[in-house]
Length: 57
Image (cartoon, rainbow, N blue to C red):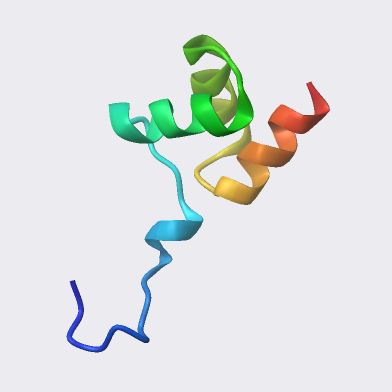
């Protein structure tokens, strides 16, 4: 955690294959685990691109 709460890292912009992140993605996009992992693999680590990918499917 940074000393200055106004400074935010890129972590909120990225999504990874970690279980808690996949679970969050499954919940927010209402998709299966397989679809969430596929979206991360196909769209890359950008959360915005992953959500766009899932919206198109």
